[in-house]
Length: 177
Image (cartoon, rainbow, N blue to C red; front, side):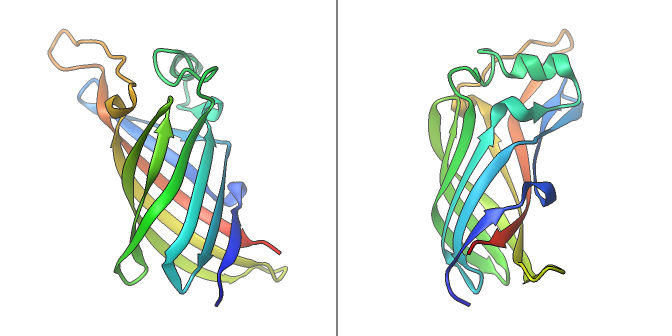
């Protein structure tokens, strides 16, 4: 197959995250609004160009008070930094259908290089004849690397919010005409 532009189908895709809470549990969340473009030949993803944009105001941790706090200057400061972005800079095949995708991540005005393990899940036509591809991915970032350092000490030792954020992606994309 040749190089094709693919647009993410947000109704069949997700960007989820989790962070350690109180040193004993994990809080999970998701972003409901995001878009991405992928310019790729599914037969050789090492040449792909990938760009993501996430609307930070769409954060959902199933707690409105926490979500509103995450939108403030203590965390994302959505009035100044309404988007999280990712632009690929390097893609290396590590195994059959497995890739290390490295790119520039920008969160709260800070840009850093991060690598995510991505799996090409397959390609096919939907019942209406539209060409689709699927990907899944996982990675970890440290929120403090992006200036997201708000925290509180616990009486028993440790901190309220962990530094490491686990990110999980499920992406279905459609070929663009």
